[in-house]
Image (cartoon, rainbow, N blue to C red; front, side):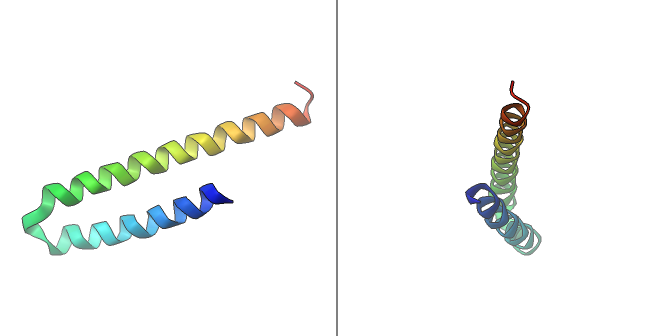
Length: 63
């Protein structure tokens, strides 16, 4: 599923960003901003996935 693939990519990117945050003290604001952007996108994807599940459940139950 495309959403799951993107979430996995974001998880890896998030881990890399944490590493950069701990190692690159000079660019702390940059890495914190990137981390917030990653978290926002992950939240959006989770919401899309949740809505898709609701639609599937409604279709299965005849709503």
